[in-house]
View 1: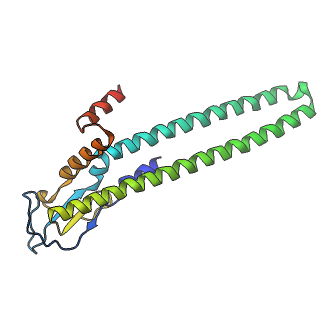
View 2: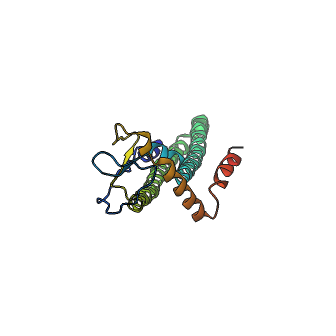
Length: 203
């Protein structure tokens, strides 16, 4: 799970758009000396505060805990049966012990396969959902950039593509506000209700 979230956290959302022909400008997007209208997004902050990303992390954390609990329960039962075999082998005879040992060996192989299948499914489902979310974010930012008349929208964070920029060029908060509002609408809730639900869940 940590690997999945790490991948999500370091995804670069750098979007390169065709040079805009519109003359429309916004106060938060200065035009640099070369005449280009540019802005940047703190992608690390975006991934941490975008509600869909928060929900994604919570979902797969819960799934991971459920899988680990189930596997742990299976393993405890297996270990208990192994100990029973060790205690009873002498009193029940060699033939019983050999049959029991063969049975436990098969169970051990089944448990190993079950763990591998769970992890494979977990990783595959997480990757598909993560890629879909990141693709949607890129599409949104690209469209936002075009509508606002940006020539370039850069991404900065763990995988930084901007080493320096004036504060006025950052549009992270604007993007977060709009994306969280749209995500809340898609779930039938308001953006203000999401933090309340998260707080109640923690209680």
